[in-house]
Structure formats: structure tokens, C-alpha cells
Amino acid sequence: MLIVQKYGGSSLATTEKIRFVAEKIVARKQAGNQLIVIVSAMGKTTDSLINLAKEIHSSPPDREMDLLLSTGELVSVALLCMAVENLGESAEGMTGYFAGIQTDNFHTKACIQQIEPSRVIKELNNGNIVIIAGFQGISSENTITTLGRGGSDLTAIAIASAVKADLCETYTDVEGIFTADPKIVPEAKLIPEISYNELLEMASTGAKVMQSRAVEFAKRYDVPFAVKSTFGKEGGTMVKEISLKEGADVSSVSLDEKQAKITILKVPDTPGIAAKIFSALGKENINVDVIVQNISKENFTDISFTVNIVEVEKTMKIAKAITKELNAAEVIHDTEIAKVSIIGIGMMNHPGVAGRMFETLAKENINIKMISTSEIKISCVVSKSDGTKALKSLHKEFIQ
Ligand code: ASP
Ligand code: MG
Image (tube, rainbow, N blue to C red; front, side, top):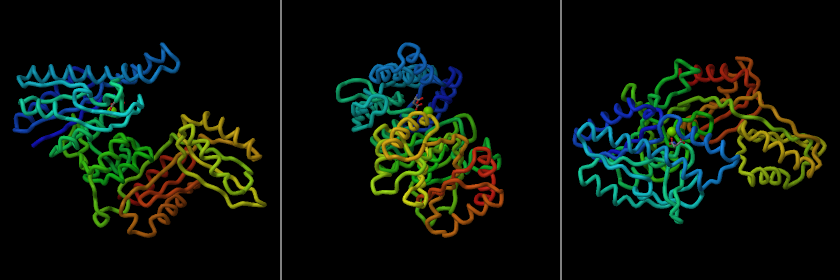
């Protein structure tokens, strides 16, 4: 079998762990497989590199930032190759460039445009374990690019797709994908199989397991992959296309405490107002999540929306300018909120899920401030102090 594996930073945080990973890889090779291994930077290396850059420059140039960040993964490649060689197997380490990962020129968040894996294939055929630096590529201007935080996931999925791997496994420090965050809900269970779409919704509702861009890529090119634990039990979660019939009505619940609610009060209720507000935010690359517009009274309305908490200041600045421009009354914000969500592809077939969700929250005396839905997700914004209780009660209602 041709297997692509990816090891995250926590799996490679020390030389001891690197040796352990090398043993795992060599065992798979010696069982008769061909192996391509994608690695992240050791432990929190990428964060440390970012901090170093910020000590030098308050907003470091993106191109040099990529040059700097790409070094983290190279350390992992070199050390893992050495560890494999030490076990008597031959390994060939590669940068993203040598692995043929061609990207656009958007430094720090480059998109993969093409993969030309001939060198990878050649080295595999020479009997080598191929070890590739994740998270990096080469632009059309021959500069080193990176693929956004968590980008090694994308490297793994894209390489698996390009070489038509039989199996793609991403190894991390959790045992797979759970029905809720086990740190908050101890009864949470491992999900053996989940669809690309559910995993994407989970990421957007605060459960960060895989880089979303990697999951989108996997969905687009249909690259099933497993999420597994490096040091814990085998098993894990298989992410793949799942038909509606097989899907549970609710497969997971999640809590996002990093949201803030912005409200613009007394906005004149005329066509084009929402467009004005949200295109101004879009221009500044601010991701707006839940949006609610109240019923208009005397031709005025209130508009509320949520953004990631780190963008509150930037958002308030823009919202204040717009408030003035629109002759709205005022803009306020609330950071004491949380978003609880239930997700499941089976929801499309099961009416009444929303009602059950609201009833569950009502029974716990939890006030819902905002609601948003997609075909396979319902989110409610509640007070931050109710977040954990809401998550636990929804898990109890829908999962167990
Ligand atoms: N080292 C990079 C990061 O921390 C890429 C990755 O881990 O996937 O974002
Ligand atoms: Mg990572």
C-alpha cells in the first residue's frame, strides 16, 4: 500500500518523540508499504518564530515571515530522517519545493495551485521513506510560501491526492474526533466515521481538529483520511463522504467562547443598509458569523452580528464609522457570549431537531440571544456563563 502520514507538532515535540515516530514509520515500511510522511514544526516552534519576528518588527513583511516560518518544518524533516536512518532504513527528506508543491504568491496564506510529485515518486521507487516539510510551497516567483496556520494538514491531503495514496492518516495528540470536547464533556465519545461537511461545520463552530482548508481540499477531491493518535490507542476517526441515510441526526455538539456580539442600534430601515455594513467589514477581511436583524419599528431596526473576539476592536472602529454615516443611533458590543452548536448531516431528514434544541436550553433556563442555521447545523448564542451548561445539556439530549 502507498500510505501518506502526517505528524503534527505535538507528536514531534522532543527528540524522544521523534524517535518514537520513526519507529512507527519504519514498522509500517517493513510491513511492506511505501511511505510518505509529512511533518509539522516541533512543538510550539511556529509560535516562537512568530514571536521572534515581532520582537524585531511590529508587522513583519509576509515574504520574510514565510522564509522564517518554513525553517520550523525543516528541522523536523532533518531530525526525523536521521532517526529513521538510525533504525537502518533509508529516508529522503524534502522541502515543499522539492516535493513539487506550487502555490500562488499570497505569502503566509498561499493556495496550492499544482503539485508535481515526480521526485517524491522517484524516491519512493528507490526504496526510500520520503519525509516532506509540511506547511510550505514555492510561488511562481520562486519564493518560499506557507499555507496558513495548521497548513501541514493541507500538505498531507494534497500530496495524498497527487500521488493517489491508498491511505492518508493524520496523527495528532487526540484519539480522533469526539462528539464534544472531552475536556468539558467527559462522557464525549469517539466518532468512528464523519463526513467532510460535518467536520467543516465543527471547525467553524469552535472545535478545531484539522485545518479547514485541508478539509475543504479533501472534500473537493474526495480524499478520505483518518485522524489518529500518535501515542494513544489506535482506532481514530475516518473522515469521508457519508450518505444522508447513514448519518446520525446530531453527530456532535460544540462550544465557541471566542465570539463577540456587535449591535448597531436604530439603523434606518432602507434597502442597501445591510449591504453597506457587511461589505465594509468584508473589505477589511472580518469574518462575520451569526447575523440578526430585528423587526423594524417606525422604520428603524437593530442589527446584531458576531465576530471572532480578536477582531472586536477593528470591527468596532469600522462599525462606529458606519453608524455615523448611516445616521444610526449607536454601536455596542458584548464579549460575554458563547456560541453552542449541534451538527449532523441527518438533521436534513429529521424535522424537529431545532425545537428539541431550544427546549433543552429552555429547561436549563438558558436564554437564547441569537440563532443561526445551516442545512446540517444549528447554533445558538447564549451568555458566556451559560456556555458549559448548554453544551453538556445538549450532549445529553442528542448524543446519549
Ligand atoms: N507549523 C505550522 C503551524 O503551527 C503548520 C502546522 O503545524 O501544520 O501552524
Ligand atoms: Mg498543527
